[in-house]
Amino acid sequence: MLDLGLAGFVAGLLALGLRRPFLWVLAYIYVDIVAPQKISWFLLASVPISLIVFVLAFGGWLALDDKRDSRFSFRQGLMVLLLCYCGYTTLVAEFPVEAATKWSWVWKALVFAIFLPLTLRTRLRIEAAALFMVLSLSAIVIGGGIKTLAGGGGYAQLSLLVNDNTGLYEGSILSTVAIASVPIVVWLAKHGTVFPPDWRVRVFAAALIFACLLIPVGTQARTGLLCIGLLAILSLRMVKRRMLYLALIGASVAMAIPFLPASYTERMSTIENHKSDQSASTRLAVWSWTLDYVRDHPFGGGFDSYLANRIRVTTLDTQSSGNTTAIEATVVEDQARAFHSSYFELLGEQGWPGLAIWLLLQFTGLWQMERVRRRWKDRDGPDEQWQAPLANALQQAQIIYLFGGAFVGIGYQPLILCIIGLQCALASYLKRVESERRRPVPRSTRVMPLPAA
Amino acid sequence: MVDYFALAVSHGLMALAAWRLMLRRELDSEPGLPDSGPGAGIDSGREKQAPARRSADA
Image (tube, rainbow over all chains, first blue to last red; front, top):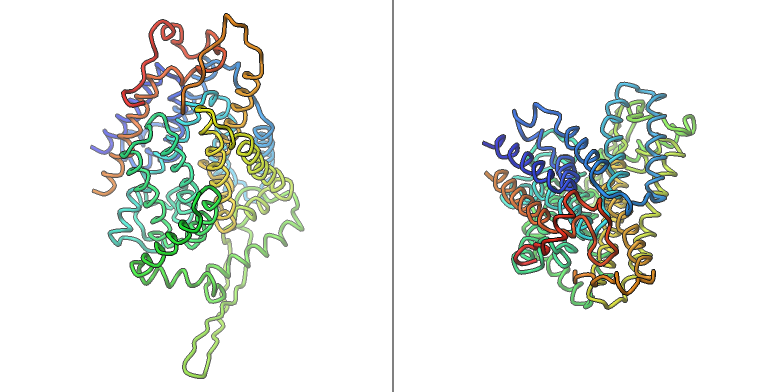
């Protein structure tokens, strides 16, 4: 039944694409995020669905779509550069087999992120891409949120749609991405035209945001908790009554704490006492190893170069009883520990040049969205209200990702690369809109104004 | 059961969104800007003759 339902949905989406080929691009976003071939046991699992949808999306654009409004931007160029560089490091990788495995999905994610802005040449397409990202993510997040409420959470225990701990189905990654998507959910609820704002949209958006906030609780990912804190701070920028907002947040936190499971509060307390926590101490040791590693390999060791590491970690556990405090030191030896940080992942795998390209790609995004936001925020036309909030939402999503990414290895996360693609598309679209408006239009060909968003 | 519910809600909304998108001409050409030309969508010519169909509450 589930197989039939998923296969029917994908087939229906692909069939609608025969009339509107752009829907194939949305279908790829869906397949990339939800991975229905992993949920399905038979029908979708037996065909290379990801490849088929990608070929349709790219072929549909190449053969049927208008390309005159498509622009290739500097940031897309950076992604091409990163793609070529990753290809080179894969060829000379220290662990060629493992590197080839990771390359097999990284190149697809990068190519799609480079391709996506070329297709997003109308306002509705930009909105549709954001909507499909959020709704696809909701397939995972809604279930995770409900299970957390029902008490089914726990570190590496929350049962998601797929339990293979890869891609978005890994707890820390899902926590970071779910929190990063909250600003986009808010934008869609306020400025969406596919589902125009009404009480049903507001109820769904509120429930989805609540589910996103529950994911770090359910997965007990400490990174997610830090991301929620950052989200609360970032939101201050756009709210009108800041004191009321702060008071509401304080009250919500105070009310929520008694309901949190004891295992969760215990695990979160290790954020400040990281020396007693092996996972956190190992991270510091791996990062230190990475810095040593790139001294000998400044151009990186290729994908999964962390497999070369061997580390010794000393954890200190403090036990107080009356006036005496006992400190117990435990030495743990470990090897092949993952980077647990996007920055060190890029540094260890792609070396200094790769990290520099990646950082440039990320920070030009923050700057680009800030420019768009400032340029559009004070405009008062009915069709000029959605641009600055979208730029703000995409910027906030990226800031949360860059913060969460410091503790989770998600340097090439496909959903985040799609958000970068959305940023490129928004900047390029608005540039085109402004230049078209500045151009004098002959009286006979004057066109109607943009509809209110 | 929870998974089925989550899948039904998310996929139902995506199906509805895809249907609504298919009916909107702004998907392929921006109405406020000079026309994207004959290549703007595979059936842009047909749509120019018919009034734009929008979803009931759009």
